[in-house]
Picture (cartoon, rainbow, N blue to C red):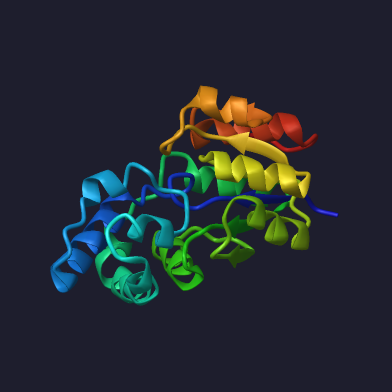
Length: 205
């Protein structure tokens, strides 16, 4: 069977901070509720609803989340670049005969828009999964490696029995990722092809 590698999206494959900040600013303008979007993008990873709970009453969060997700394609997609090494990391897996699945807490249609916009071809996308719940998709697709930037990604990998490969390109540092149980910590995804070539015999970096 070909190896299947899972990747997180926000701050692993893409730098979603500019787009998310723009979407939060638009949401703030529409609702009249002050949102510190610069602060919000320093703690990306957990589900949207947890961030919105900092700014809105609990009873308003579901409707506000729906509105944010509706605004997102217009305000966030075009502002969001791929992180260094993202395309090459995905290409390394596929060139080695492997499959790539993106497993993210992001709303799945918006996650797909990011990948399509950036030209990053993957085999499957599963959204709205966070921390241990990511193991549902990782197990379903038979992923034996999961790459992410957050302790929640480490938890998802370990719950699925997958190798946890972490990159400190998001809000969590390398030491914290190791302490959470990451098996491998790379500086960023530019190091992934060489690591993958060493991990899977016969793959050329």
